[in-house]
Image (cartoon, rainbow, N blue to C red; front, side):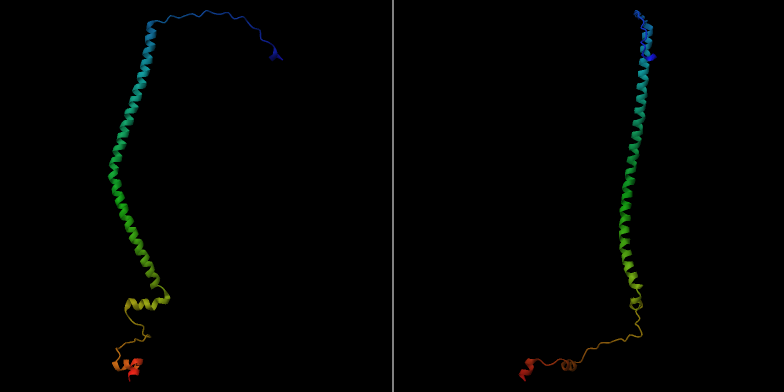
Length: 149
């Protein structure tokens, strides 16, 4: 209810604006403060730039010192990779030999191969050159020889 009541309006009188004369000293002091403020900001920015440039130069110098170390580490890595590759080949060979030597079905053959001894139950066969007469007896005569006789 009270919100709808119009507020009484008072006539406003226009007050004349009063111009305050500024003295030259106040104006100079204000411009000096502004100049000092800008100078301080410039000094701060210059200090930041100087510190950043010095840090950048130090970082670049450190990187250049690390380059020879990196190249030597790459050479060592290549040598190690070659060693790993050759060791991998040796491991494959040893694994294949392991399965041969420890196979129960091939135990006698592998022991014979390693020691040079022959199984006592095995008979040794010695081949001799056959005599000429035995060769003729085993080979039948040719048909051409029989026709000529």
